[in-house]
Image 1 (cartoon, rainbow, N blue to C red):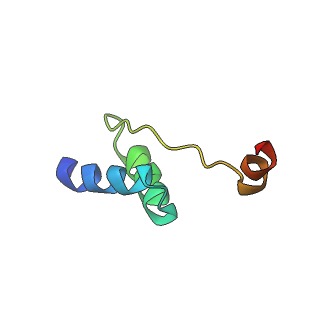
Image 2 (cartoon, rainbow, N blue to C red):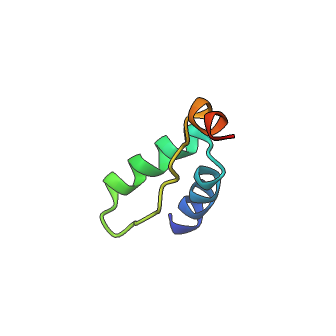
Image 3 (cartoon, one colour):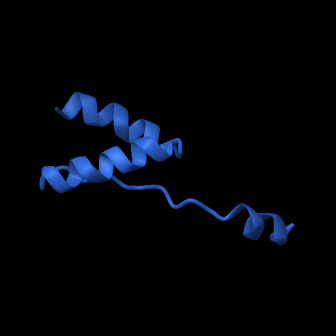
Amino acid sequence: MWDVNNGIARRSWARNNGAIFAINRAMEAEARLKVTIPNIADYEVVEGLF
């Protein structure tokens, strides 16, 4: 289980929406699993800064 979730976590850090969903679901199912989820920036906000 840990190896599979490690791969899902890596994909979520790459901002893959399906992986973010999957790792959130996995963390709900396993209380010992803790993964930092990326914050997705709004493209318009970022573009407005430059």
